[in-house]
Length: 267
Ligand code: PBE
Image 1 (cartoon, rainbow, N blue to C red):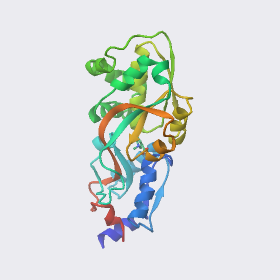
Image 2: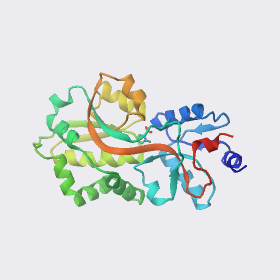
Image 3: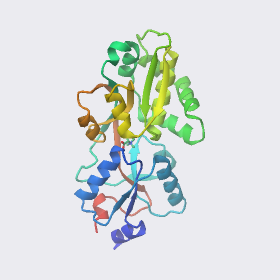
Image 4: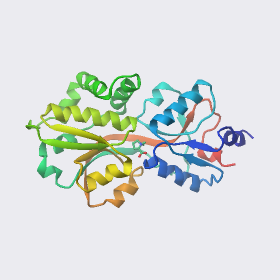
């Protein structure tokens, strides 16, 4: 049957990203829930996954990846999410800005910016596409800021300038998070902060904010994607606000593949 050939054609492999990503935990869960006994989730990185996607896509070969929105791959390629009738990947997720305890008292101006920080899929997408097209992250971030002064003015509305206060943001090398973290770094620097951004893995990112060694992270995907981290560190961080609504994670395939649901992977 067609579905049987899908499994065989990809050697029963789902091409994933870094092991600490929430979407990896969700995919392990999906493998259990949908009884995909023959299937294996292969870990790697966001960059390795999109390289594999490009290779397969250029030859119209089958591939199954762990996808999410916002992501530039949806504007570069014709892709679709596989239906998830069991709801393992959740529904509409939100991106939360998560701060260390005490951030509001220590850096009230930065805290206020993070509280007022809200943008859309298309905004983050523009930064991501620019980076994907070869621009340095900080240049892509500055380009977006230059073109979106009104939006940035809303984030900084009523915020006073500071004088070189140090801040540390932690992030993971997910394309979406590289975009948001670079934009926020420049916005805070423009207000007078001295901002360090530090790239780590997902677990260490949450840990750094929970133990106070970093001030904030911008990629708290909730309620499902980072549920394990949010529960593990409950009471040790502050959920400052939501920067984006209606984001999504799920198994993703090129449109040319003849499957529509995770259930089609079963046999
Ligand atoms: N992501 C992008 C992350 C959160 C941001 C969907 C790859 C994750 O799965 O944890």
